Picture 1 (cartoon, rainbow, N blue to C red):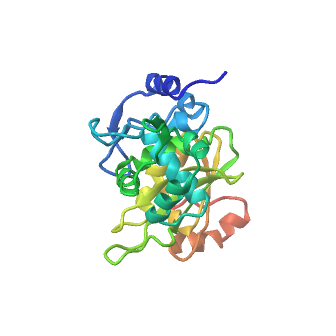
Picture 2 (picture 1 turned 60 degrees about the horizontal axis):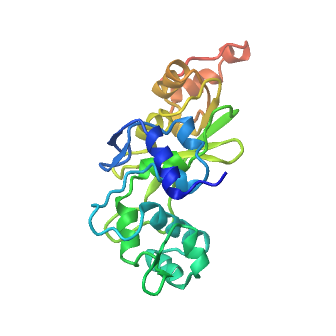
Length: 258
């Protein structure tokens, strides 16, 4: 049964638990990671309707959902900048503009996309943590989740370093969520924040040597009831030496130490 965008928005609002500060920034966001009800909403538009609109009500010409979907469609079509997103939207046919939710305006009953200046302004203000969690894949029932970080290509500017993203991905290559690592820290500080909203009971969490930390292992085993598999290198000299020792050869795993 088809639901209008207004009906989907009403359903989404009933499923939202509350609002707080985004775990990635100072923007208002969902109180906690989306429930199964939110993740199960039909279509991306219904999920995006859960996000609070950062703009003032006065002067809005287009919905938050339509602007974000326009940007997503343009990027999938090859756009690599906000200017390219605006150019794609200006040349999109009327039936294409109808899909993200742009309504015809009179006269002469023509759908007009968001302006090139609106798109980057909205994308800069929208909640990044809410976007990542709402559009991510639920890890429930998955065998393993891999945690890894990469710098986003093309994100470096004259005044800021490249954005470094820490992501969690399932064994079937579905992204669960991702966080931007603050410029003056590293991936270690974002490990628990990335995985905290999700149930990981019985799931094997894998990570590289940077995350071979006693605190991470204890948190996964005790707080999340998960298993872990991490790489041991020279950054853990004591553990590295213990792994080569006779205790491991006899079938006894050494404890993870800092």
